[in-house]
Length: 144
Image 1: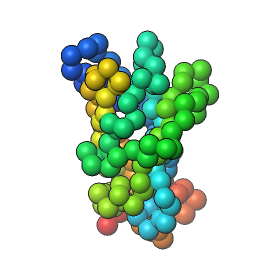
Image 2: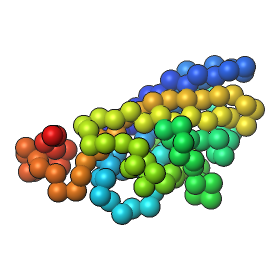
Image 3: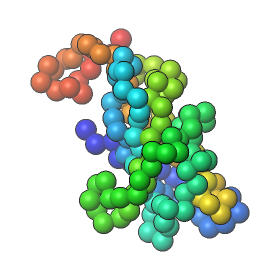
Image 4: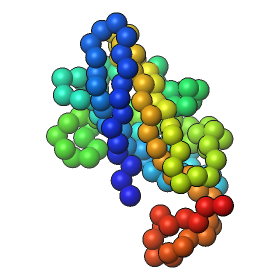
């Protein structure tokens, strides 16, 4: 399942950025996972450069800071548009969500010129060993 989605960005004081794309990895968050990070790939609309994002301002869920030393600009989805890879503390995100088929994850921050950006995306949250209604489909988690 691809977790890429459009996010509307609200900008104050400068130019209006209408949308960006973000992809979380993993797109299904296991609350029992011992992994260290959640990765976000951020792609801005045409005319904006991801290198202008002030990484020190990026937050998930309004409180989880980006790992400043763990960034890279590349083309994660091979579409010819640069994206910013950034990592966030997985345990902090895990403690802010509960098991649900789709949970809103907020991403906020600013460009280097102070332009504010904010978006909301969705990921799935599970517990390891959750029951599936179709054992051949890992996305078929029985909630409850």
